[in-house]
Length: 308
Image (cartoon, rainbow, N blue to C red):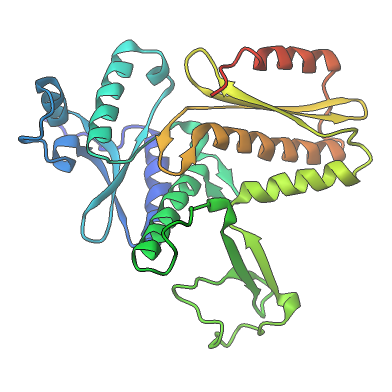
């Protein structure tokens, strides 16, 4: 009898590595291949016999736990066949139903969610939203934030300070003090401080809006379309009019349901992010625009998507 690897493909290894590195800073840890029956208390839970049998046999790809080994949420890496294979869809629906009954967050990702934005995988940005929302709820429970306040991730600001070496370092309010600065910091002169949005897509949208107003090669405001295709995948396309055509960027992502994060909005933000990078390449002569006819065909395709 031979032993089997817990992680069977490169994408699972990449997911485990990115997830483990990120949640470590939150005082949490990741466990791979955890059986549903070990996460949920399924005895006398009222679930069906079929669900009970499934929970005893099926596992989560990854479970994120706090320092007390309390499960917080699970992450599943889905290969493309999960969108079309009827048996896979059936099993996925059972798993999703059990998670919903247990009020246990389940994040389903695909290869596109391992792409990096500002050097951090999109998977980790999604998890960051979850952890910041948890901190927000805890602050409400302790009376630090009014109960009627709404959590808005895009409203979170970060304070960065330049060190003597010239590098920028983010101030972590949980660890750093503005009064007792480390000796290698130069102080708090205004030119050595930056306030940044934590949400990288806010920065991308602001940058695109500024270019549309100021750059002579851009002839108008961009157009966005987003929606779901026939197999339920999220789609977004951004079209930027330039002098000799259009810069067009299309992004397609696996849809998911996860607290505080809209997979469709994330896909739209990624399209803006990629469109901005394509625009930079166009300015440097490394990207050619497409014709108006192709822009029309993209508009027709986008109009076939289901708007939600």
